[in-house]
Length: 155
Image 1 (tube, helix red, strand yellow):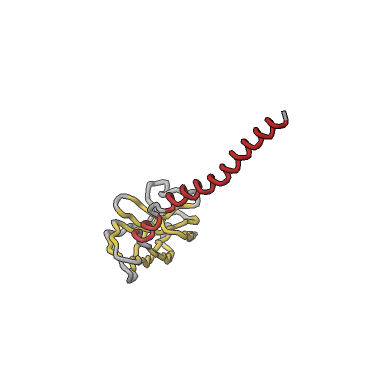
Image 2 (spheres, rainbow, N blue to C red):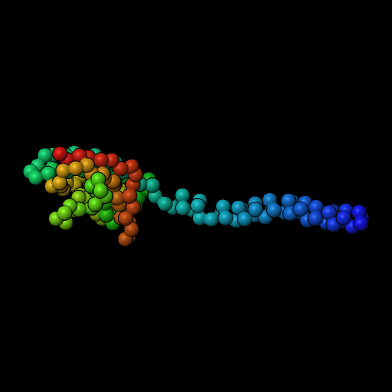
């Protein structure tokens, strides 16, 4: 009885030892195959866009005129179908109760390159409050926002 117990125990340990030896190699193979995905290609082919927005609020009755100066560039030549400063109120709404949008008028199409370009847009916002804004650009039919965002207040 003792001999059969030892044989069974050795068989189980052999399976465990083989599993311990094979499992890391299998995991490394899976990691190696997935790490050669398009990550390197994405880095090489996706342009980097840098943008900054300076906002000035000028008093106007009713509300205020919001003037945004956008400075934007890319690490290589690229075409944008649109560029705009998206604005939301403190509740996240895109427009006031009368249906007037808060976002500043967009521009585009625009050819970007390594030299920075400046675009200015203005909109009257008739409601008081705190508003957040972010720079957004469109390639094809897809809008992408660039962090970070900031806020301005109309009193």
